[in-house]
Amino acid sequence: MGDGWRARAVGSRRARIGTAAGVALMILLVAVVAVRRGPDEVETVAAADPIPTTTSDAPSTTAAASTTTTTTFPDTTTTAAAPPEVVVPATVAPAPATTAAPAPAPPPSPAPGPAPAPAPQAAAGPIPYFPPGGIEPYRGLGVWLDVLDWSPSYTSGRASVTPAAVDRMADLGVQTIYIQTSRFNRTEDIIDPGVLGQFIDRAHARGLRIVGWYMPTHEDHETDVRRLIAAAALPVDGICVNIESQNQPDIALRNERVLDLSYRLRAATGKPMSAVVVPPVVTQILNVNYWPNFPWQQLAGTYDVWMPMAYWTNRTPASGWRDGYRYIAENTTLIRTLTGRSDAAVHPVGGIANEVTTGEVDGMAQALVDTGAIGGSLYDYVTSGDPLWGSLQAFRR
Image (cartoon, rainbow, N blue to C red; front, side, top):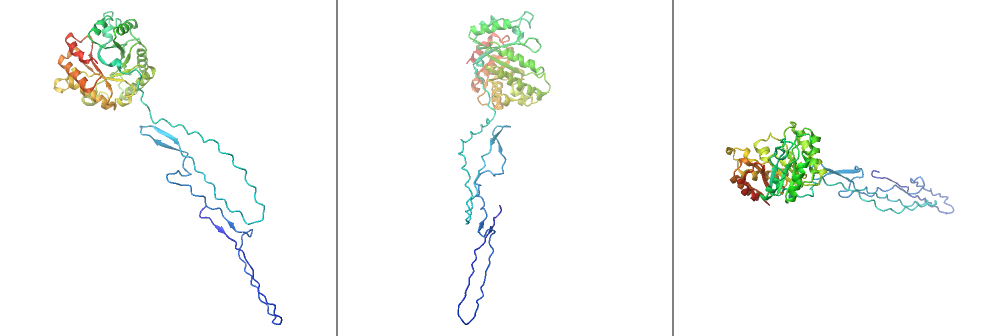
C-alpha cells in the first residue's frame, strides 16, 4: 500500500467573548475558526502497513511453488516442496469514536487440523545393485571349456573333454569350471543340455563350482539376452558375460547393447555375474580405437567380478608387455581405476596355455598376490600341459 496516508479532522471550538456593560453598546465580534474534518466528523486512520514477513533466507511470497535441487549424483535432480508461505494478519485498526453500534464479531476460526505429512523425498540418486550371490564361484584356480572341447553336437561326436574329466580337474586342485553354454552360430539357446547337465552334476559332486559363459555378438540383441538368461537359469553357480565381440560395428550401439544386456540379465537372476572383458591395457594404451568409450563405470554396480583376458602371449617381447607379472598386474590395477572401485574383485585370465612358460605362470601367480586378485586361470583346460599344474596350484584361494 505504499507509504500509507492519514486524513485528520481536528476538532474545533468557538470562543465568544462578550460584556454586558450597560451604556457602551459595544459588540464584540465573534471569531469563528473552522477546520477541516473527516467525512464522519471523526478521526480516520488508514490501516497500517502489514508487518514485514521477510527474514534471513526466507522465500519471497512470489516464489514458485517448488524448487529444484541438483544432487551430487550426475544427471539426477530431486524436486522438493518449497517452505510454506508465511501468513501474517494485518494490524487491526482501532475502533472509531462513534456511538454507532459495533459491528458483530466474526465467527470464531475453526481449530487448526493436524499438520500435513511431509512430502516424500526422492531418492538421492541411483543406488548400485550388488547381487547377493557373492564372489565365491570365481575365487581361486579355474579352468575354461568351450563348445569345441566338450559339446558332442558341435564336434560331431568327437569332444575331447567328457564329464568324466571333472574328476581329473578336481584331483589337480581346480576349484571352478567355466563352461560355454552355446555359441553365436548355433540355433539352440543351450547346447547339448543333457551332457551339460552331467558336467554340472559331476562338478558339484566333487565339490567344484561351475559357471556358465556365453559371448554375445551385439547383432541380434534379443537372442543375446535370451541366451544369457537361459544360461543363468541352469543349476550353475554363476554366469559369465564374455564382452569382446566386435561384430556390431556401431560402437555407440554396441555400448548401448552391452549396458542393456547387462542390466536385463542382472534383473533376471540373483546369481553372481562376471564380466569377461578385453584387457584395459589394450583399450586404454595399446589400441585406443579397439573399443572407445567402453562403459566401465556404468557397469561397475552390475557385475560382481571382472575377468580381463590378460593374454600376455598376444604381446611381443619387444613391446615390454610379454610378461606374466606385468601384464596381469597392470590390467588388474587399470580395471579398478576405470571402474572407480579400488576394491573391485578381479580374476584375470592369463595367456593361451600352450604358449606360456612355467616362469611366466609363476610371475602371474605373484601378481595375483600383489594386487589382491581373488583368483586366476589360463585359457584353456585342454591346452594346459602337465608341467604347468605345479605352478597353477599357486592360484588357489
